[in-house]
Image (cartoon, rainbow, N blue to C red; front, side, top):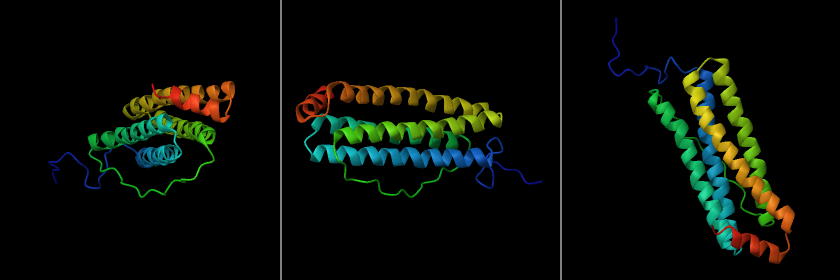
Length: 175
């Protein structure tokens, strides 16, 4: 009988974590890292176009998304599983304007929410209550993300998208 003193599986897998959940967690890491890159690309474009406050906000969003990837990484590491470090495709870097960036960000958060719901459903289906606890953290975060993006969409719809309105909109994001 062979004794495993490390407590870690020889296949870099924990028996408490299914292969399906492992794949979903690594996918969550990839998607959060990709979200970070998307928002960084938007921030750089906004900065280059003179939207100083919007650029700072999207840079903050980028940093937040990167930290969300760490939630899944930390979970996997706590299970003795090495998380993947995925190759990421380059996001676009040419946008039509701030209103498009707001809409694209809103749409992106809808996609991310669907992904988070999928992993939560899988955790429930498999009775993995520990993973479900992590997914609740992601879903609570998505409620905040939707609130932020919905407020931005609403402001643009209410006050318009002409140059003066966009300048005032950008200034309002300083806070």
